[in-house]
Image 1 (tube, rainbow, N blue to C red):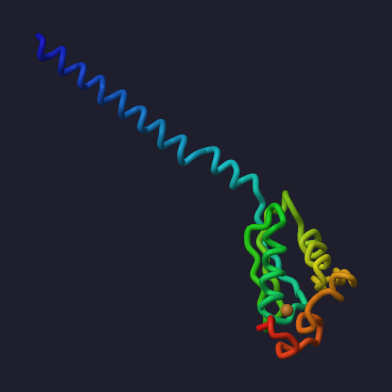
Image 2 (image 1 turned 180 degrees about the vertical axis):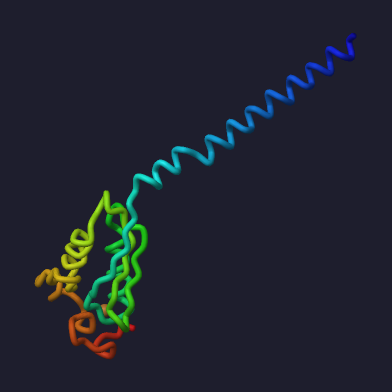
Length: 137
Ligand SMILES: [Cu+2]
């Protein structure tokens, strides 16, 4: 009789532990994550940014990534294409372009802020050459 009691305790323990584990894995994988993924609308768009060198690349990419909602930003020095992935509920292509224009580059149809452009190293200005400035690669 005692054996049966112990046995049933063990069974009870295993069963309740098992249930907890199932609960834990349900809440981990979860509705919350999938709801969020469902709610966020990721968009990818590509537009031209008239940077010149590797330094421009860093600035352009970090400016884009600094905007809330931007998930990825890659600028190609050769093609001048900036490819951005962003949550369209948090930001927009236009906002990203305006932020980049503010640091001195033409972005898509948004023209560079003139003052910021004047402050760029010579090599980073439109038509600049890498050899114009040692800091530029
Ligand atoms: Cu540059």
